Length: 356
Ligand SMILES: NC(=O)c1ccc[n+]([C@@H]2O[C@H](COP(=O)([O-])OP(=O)(O)OC[C@H]3O[C@@H](n4cnc5c(N)ncnc54)[C@H](OP(=O)(O)O)[C@@H]3O)[C@@H](O)[C@H]2O)c1
Image 1: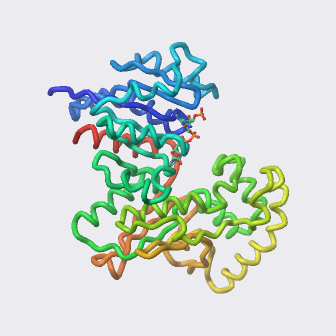
Image 2: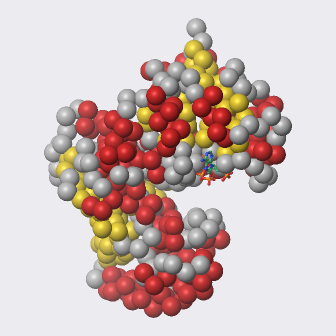
């Protein structure tokens, strides 16, 4: 079989980026023999700089980068590091650039990559959830994929595209899109106080170091916006109403002050849980979008409904469409974790490399 080389550029070498690099190293021989496609990492970047070799970074350099970043170091701890501003030198037609950062600063590089004829794969939701006038190019570009931005490794975007491509009419999308908030709801349901549940989620690494990143609902709102825009509804963030799981008065304080203040919210959330349970319901953090807008927030759902039956951090996405009118098409399963997320990114990389 003829071997086709696919050059890969990494922006970000965090949890997902490292898992992706390991998966490429561990599976590329199998991939080459199965499909004739050979994945060759040519650049690795984090905030400290860039390792670049246009012919392919040697395996020992890739393994050293994995080790250094796993040990908590930045790439600039390694020899041969160049300034991040040189990333443009890595761009070449046919290469695939993966954005596995959570940074608002990669957008110019993404646009330069597309202009240079690269394909782009995003795990980063931020470029897709800004103003529509700026994000539109990313949604409409034939060489850009973003499967893992909603539901991580679950085939959510692929399913939505399949529905649209086969002429179905999507009328609404709803679901639980956050493993972290799923965990929180499950703990509240078990009678764990809000303050304890938030603190546990933080120490388990389920939340960002500042848990308000998750509790604000912003991340879920970004996912809802990505689903809406993929469905063909060019909504703006302002078209979504978002309920944060803390009061406005705690929005501006330091992380430590916020954590110290969480016990003041225990009673409020305990009574919301009790009120829901008295009516045979339970609280879930639900996103709903339709052609004209949507909402993201806590909803009391029947305990025996699919959303009520969700356990812990599982995700659930239901597509209501003209064909799936009575019973929605549902995708459910683990919606987070570096391994499944990296595999989803790898799937996009393989798909784009095979078709461009
Ligand atoms: N983890 C999951 O389960 C999951 C699921 C779905 C989607 N995602 C998304 O995947 C992305 C990565 O997640 P993660 O858990 O791997 O995050 P992470 O561990 O925080 O890693 C982010 C990486 O990006 C680097 N970075 C930041 N700004 C950069 C820039 N301008 N240029 C190059 N590199 C830059 C960071 O470098 P420094 O360390 O030097 O700052 C770090 O290596 C996020 O957008 C996340 O929302 C994650």
